[in-house]
Length: 187
Image (cartoon, rainbow, N blue to C red; front, side):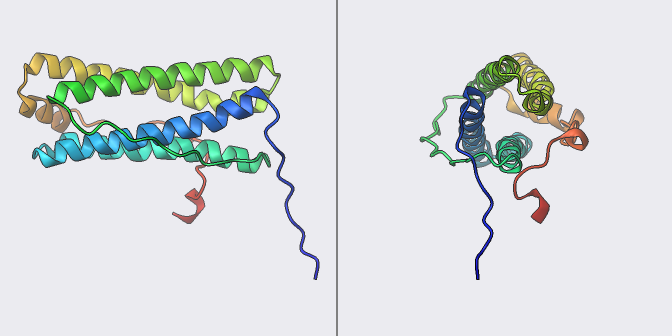
């Protein structure tokens, strides 16, 4: 019996390579947020831990959305390895500051990807990436707000815990418009 096998095309454009790099970046950020969540959890700061556990899952899902897009378009995907993350911090503000920087880097990466997709005339890819651009605006705003609250708390993380209790971060803001994540059909 001859099996019919789906043809998977090798990556042939700069945008496709950038998409795969974005998968690695998303997984790396997910791992870093997991390390932050564990740090907060070990210090009995449950709301901060929960927030960063959720962020870890969101970043993983973002990477998986790109994987699904590439699969749907029959483009070869290689899952990159993720280097070690930072686990030691001197204070909670340091973690939040790291998160702000990670979101800025992610925004720059997605902006570059969007520009390259447009330059290559990949309008479907450009449309796909628009959701990520919108998501990054919210991610940076959330992290900056958390950093400002942490600064006002002047080291009292219970104030930041209270902030998260009073003003919980919505987990499903753009999810109805989000691209499907790979493996999402199994959930």
